[in-house]
Image 1 (tube, rainbow, N blue to C red):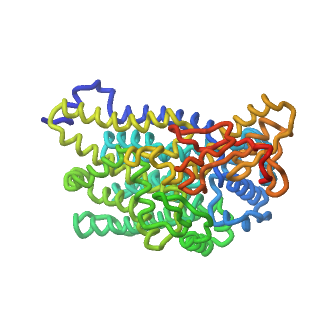
Image 2: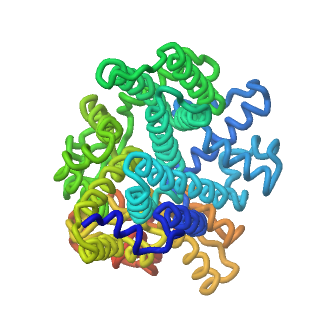
Image 3: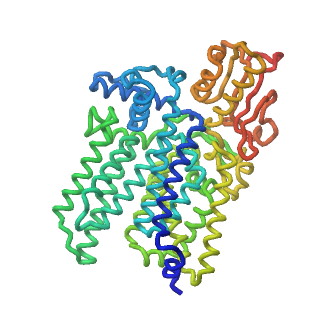
Amino acid sequence: MDTTRLSKHSRPSWLTFRTVFWFAAAVMCAVMVLASLGCGIIWDEWIQSHYGKLVLRFLVTGGADRACLNFATMYLYGGLFDTLAAFLYGVFFDRVSQVAYYGIYDDVKLYPLYETRHVLNAVFGFAAVLGTGLLTAAVGGWRAGLLALGGIFLSPRFFGNSLNNPKDIPFAAAYVFALFFLVRFLKSLSRPGWLTAAGLAASIAVAIGIKAGGLMLLHYLIFFTGAFWAYHKWISREAVPAGRLAAFVTGIALAGYLGGLVFWPYGLVNPLYHPWKALAELSRFTSAEGSLLFQGRVYAHGGTPWNYIPLWIFISSPFFFLIGLALFAGFPADILKRRDWKLVLILIFAGLFPWAYATLHRSVVYDSWRHFLFIYPPLLALAALGWDSLISRARSRKSVVLLSLLIAGLLAEPAAWMIRNHPHEYVYFNPSVGGLKGAFGRYETDYWGNSLRLASEWLARHHQETRPGQPAVVRADGELMSSAYYLVRKLGPLYVPFVEGRNQWDYWLRLSRGLPPQDLRGGAWPPAGTLHEVRADGVVLCAVVKKNPGSPPA
């Protein structure tokens, strides 16, 4: 039986997969923006926030103020997201010229600076979700695109990072849209459209404006265009004007490259050398200090095994994604026959090459697989093609209904988890390791301190109720801004930040990160004196600890 024809005649003419796709996308955008308002400040975020102010200062002074060129290692990264966030805060809540000159610790009084950043982060996150659906639809049709859209939206790790990860998520959004426009460009190689070319150039520019890794998209453009041109010329015997195509590729590459430097002062001051130098330095980045928990063992950041990334993806992605990839691997001939196999190969390459390259070059990886979030959209597109192929093989309406129910059931598990545990979506583990409870003590959980916001807000309420008008010395794990931003707003002058070796502390906001696995699983967590616990799925992510007056100084 022709299930495609059956599905067409069994629903109203207006109810197409494309219609449902765009309606669902609109709802998802609203959900992500609203959800971002409840998230905390991750460890790296205040450094990036200040970098955005410095880049804004560079721009408003016409390049005269160059403080951004020697700020930590941030100068190696593009400042597009952080500068845009600082600019928007200045437009809506302050003055742009004033924001550019705020100091690094002024963030504590710049409400709602981080809320502005998180909303912008959610917009980029939604762009990555939308781009995944559009990319999949461009390769496999609107049904596959709808499956991809729902699959990535209900991927808790990706969703959680979309709310307050200002580096990896914007890059993922640019990466997937570059792939989308590249696919469209290659599908119309004989007469590429100007809008497609402009979209491809803009996507490359945004990627470079966030991370030097965006430069690899220039290689993608040149390599795949050359390969497709050769295929058309010598295999399919179709005429593709080489001169016109070369002009398009050159224009796209130049616009993308130069556009990516607008918000990257380090690249801008030496555009022919610095971007490539930054890429080389970041590729061999080995100065990340500290340790991490993986498979119950403690590793140095530079000492993780080769399977660190694939195993993390396997244990922290929903079963919809994993089964979909298995289906794709199980029906390759069917999928490549029904789709343009060349476009499918682009998805495979875009999903696997970056990880393979980083593994061969022994790049430093840590903090789960956040550095490789950008490969998730093309991999999820392959998973959606796997599910779409299985649906296409169904021989009756009943089979289609059963498969639809199976997909809905697989997506319901992460959806329910996300609802129960917001705003901690990014600590999700799938049932293959027993969920978060099974993974705790074996893998890192709240490695970025997102839970410090809820702990800080609870502590402020508690202290005002129990010791009104009395100062409180608070010691906190993670970066200062992750807790101080909320404590200052709630307690005002009553909040006194703990200074190591100088002050006795009244309260300690403790994270599980860095504690030995035997302590985490052996009953030493949460610590003695805990007043309050911030939990996800029953696991304590952060503990508010009150100091015992009889204890020795910390």
